[in-house]
Length: 136
Image (cartoon, rainbow, N blue to C red; front, top):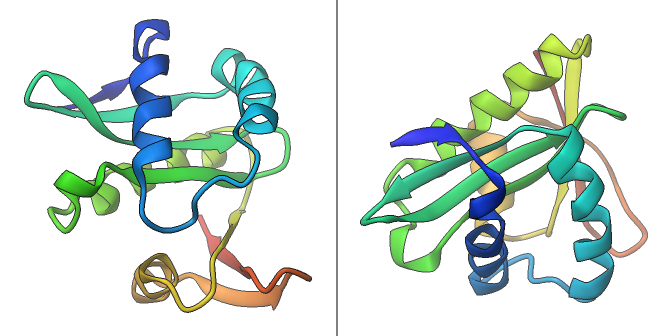
């Protein structure tokens, strides 16, 4: 089931984020601080299965970025990310953005996923992450 996240989901969202195999957090405490604002001002979409959140997506309505698309490793390769990503993109479009941007680790499954989904590489960050953009 896909639904909007509630405050009760935040702990499980964090568990899913910390469980991923790629694009692991280097400084979880810094992300937790930023997440407080985002939980209040952004919509998180969650995939719930087997009684728990197994994946989520979210965007930042301040700058037009997708900042989250994560699936618990036990639920990968089931189409969860493909189902959640358009919802975050729709939120950005509703916020007035004509395109969305995101970054991801180079040479990762995520990079391949975004390329296959029509995202266009627009550059690289100093740490090597790929910058993608997609028209909404």
